[in-house]
Image (cartoon, rainbow, N blue to C red; front, side, top):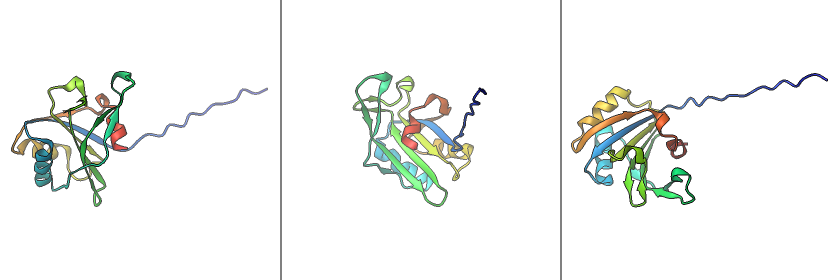
Length: 142
């Protein structure tokens, strides 16, 4: 009897994801307004919540977020406050106040987007994070 050959189908996700950490004393709605003005987007508070299970616990932790989908460029923008009532969205980066997540960024070059974010009044610092550190964001942006 002949040995059965096995083939592995690998589908690579071609979507791009950029994650920026933002330090700001602004409330989430105020920072969303500032981002809307600077980037010409329309971030609105989502009626949905993002649920994660931190450290493989049984309890789901919910996080509110702002989102915007650019129909013309097919780009998605998300603003997530790191420290909310239920805990930290990403506790390993507790010094970060917000995460700005951009999926399929066809609107801005990364360097220009970083410059624009850093020029916003009320933003103290902006950090560029590798996507590998944020596996749970894939669930939000899928």
